Length: 259
Image (tube, rainbow, N blue to C red; front, top):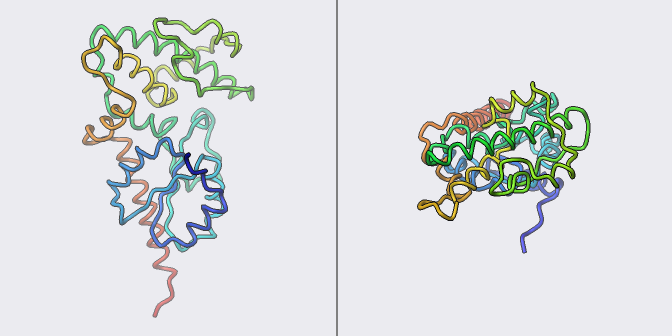
């Protein structure tokens, strides 16, 4: 049975006691990606810890003065704030370029080249439909309505189909999105469509029963990170973490009383 996520008070207390610079990230689901980031940073230079969700992470950030003697970098997914804006009181947080860390991983890796020629059109059709649905949910978000984006692509478009499932349309009261937001997401889908769905769509084709070589979700994550030598967005993230740590260490040295 997995251990419960630490509370905000427990996280703050742990950072107060720690002597190792820390990178606080959102949830456990993405820790595999962040462990690779930790390797690049050097485990002696920073410890990566999960906050158990964005709300917890931002709550800890608001209490950062309670552990001001420890360099801490905060890294969070932009999620739906990608379509509005990040609140200004979180300017010190390092945000993903795209919707999530999975988007940043996907966008620089050219994983779609793994698709066979006969799979490309099917993937494009699925992508077009998922984008249409996702754009309609973004419009609901921007209008202050109830929205849901955490659906597996198989729930939205069942395998063997190219259109939104009829029962799903009714459940979500689907209405076609406006041209502007639809075009915006389609043109920048690698950053603006939810990252989990980008990987889910690829896995649908790359793990098909009749395929000779098959790839899983975890396979694609690892390939994207480790086999893209100059990964632009993961490189940016690593550099920003290093810069945040360096700036905080310099500030601590300047405030340290002379012997």
